[in-house]
Length: 76
Image 1: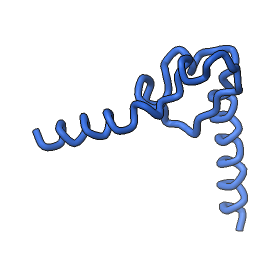
Image 2 (image 1 turned 60 degrees about the horizontal axis):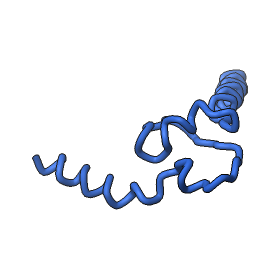
Image 3 (image 1 turned 60 degrees about the vertical axis):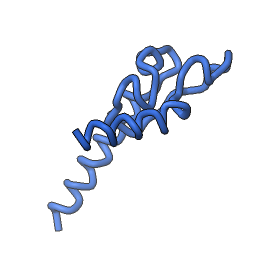
Image 4 (image 1 turned 90 degrees about the horizontal axis):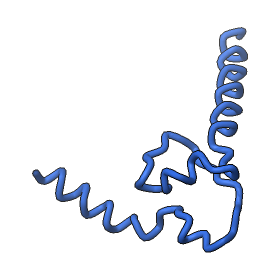
């Protein structure tokens, strides 16, 4: 019960800072996120799949960088 109250308090505190179409007010910037995404909380779900979203490309690039780092560390 205490956890649910704290969760609701945090959601209400942070919801005004959510990235949404209303907050973008007609602008169309590239949408980036460092993952994991919690749709509906920090970013509006429709923006995740929008034309200006580069979230999945960003995650893929990070995966390749992580693989290269692991390969480098394992070769020592």
